Length: 222
Image (cartoon, rainbow, N blue to C red):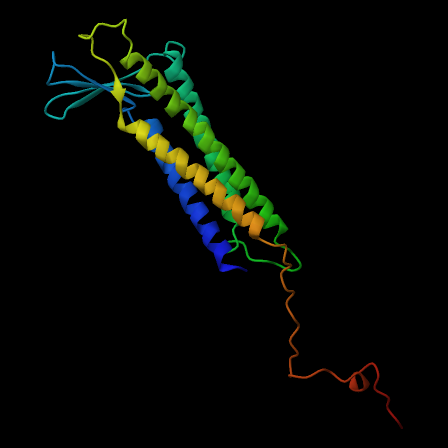
């Protein structure tokens, strides 16, 4: 087994786990968009996928969840659905990738590495798809925020939403998903179908039994 393939496998699993945690944090964070105004310098507002929050000057955070899913803005509703789908696909990819790496599943009998490579390939493809899917809602929210920020039809005195920390964390998670999927797929391409060696029988007394002295071949003379 090539050591480079093992390194790529371990890095792919590590990046996929990190990307899933980053995606989960991004989904739960309330800082997708932030807003502050000169009229109320002691308060700032945060907009997330699950509710809105008000941050007081002393660090007091007051959050209010959304009333219903159907009453959400279309962009927030779409982002919530896609982020939940990203978490599910990424977790499914990890569950395929971990049993497929060489250091986890030992070979038994005449089993080859073909099953491992299939599991790892499926895990890599799912992680790559999760990265693309997680990139869509973050980039879409950022695109709409830029358009609304530079909208000339809105007066300058009206405060505008800006990028929050969750957007940058979501971009990082999507990039880690894509890198993890690429590493797992590349390790599958490099891995050759090498059969696992069969366990050799070891003689009990260090030598081969003489068929002439076996009980079945023994002849007694009277």
